[in-house]
Image (cartoon, rainbow, N blue to C red; front, side, top):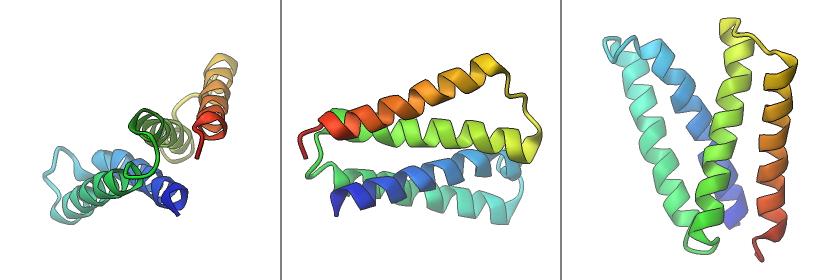
Length: 106
């Protein structure tokens, strides 16, 4: 169950990272509120999952899910470039997330 909670926390991390773009410097109330709620919920769920999963693995996976998801959504939603090198390093990041999961011992 802790892994599912951690994945949801990572997905919320993607949500708030992308949400920052829509807040326009926290000048738009609804996007700002949703982004803040996603930040708080994501961190809370990370803390819950870290009761079972070692914090080093949990934090690295949480950040990795957020970073890779935000980078991919940045390409899709905002037209950011995806060079072969950037794609390669995103794949390495995803591979690292999977490796941490497989070697965490839980």
